[in-house]
Image 1 (cartoon, rainbow, N blue to C red):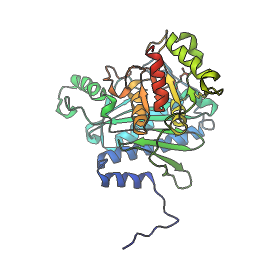
Image 2 (tube, rainbow, N blue to C red):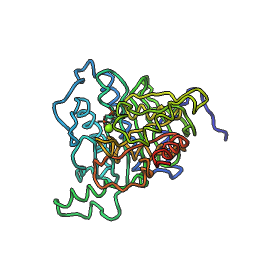
Image 3 (cartoon, rainbow, N blue to C red):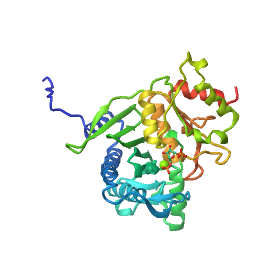
Image 4 (cartoon, protein in one colour):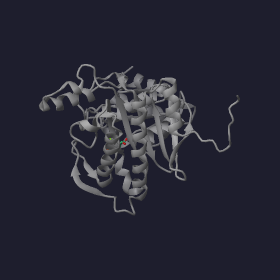
Length: 347
Ligand code: AHM
Ligand code: MG
């Protein structure tokens, strides 16, 4: 029998997850975790849209573990993300930018997957209505330290940290949700990169970006150049190179910088180019966190045919020592990242 298709047929994130399950690319538990993340993203999208109306702009009054002022929306988004993950019943440990230590999910709800996330990245943009996003990574429990084998509550914390501190190359899924002129989830389960846009009319994420590949080259650079005088000579030489008309047939690279990793990375993924947050004289490891910023984004970049590196080694190879560890990040088109690596290696 032939399969009938209809002009009313839509391909949603749910349909895609079922297909990936049939192909053996995800198991039912991981599909449930991803569905619960999508639910959190829908809620956060609605909160971000209404922030100015619902008195959700401005500071919360607290600080996160890294000493940064928390915005009201940082705190609320963290609650939303954590609650959705807990009620999925498929997560064992969750770790967030907004929490000092990873949390073991209560036993009655508990499952196997470990989820690391930044619930609202780029939140300095919120009060001006500029793009922000959520970022996540999903791991299986570390084989060396299964959480369910621990009776001693004092050891529990230590084991949670060990489970969370896994290298990016072991990620089972990573993704982000961009809250912008549209709300878009982009994710990978290790078989290419797929994007789904929220259709507000039906409240579903609909497949809009199939098997995304990042252009191999792209003449857009995205750095906070205000830090130029804090950078080392090699990086400054790279900056001079991309801006030098003579080196590029009269047309230098274009600068684009939102200050929102999800937005800046999304543009880089679609248009090509490079995003960078280097180490500098004040912050030798830069600003971005390995676990829930650099590693998930690098997994996406590599799955799309691009690269994510610290300038010295691939981000996916780094074994985290701390939950909130920072690393420099250069990410984007293969050619552009390799060019930068060439400069910062001092060649
Ligand atoms: P956050 O997690 O506290 O929001 O910080 C991360 C953000 C990234 O989204 C963005 O790329 C970077 O910080 C911008 O930093 P800066 O303002 O130093 O350019
Ligand atoms: Mg962040």
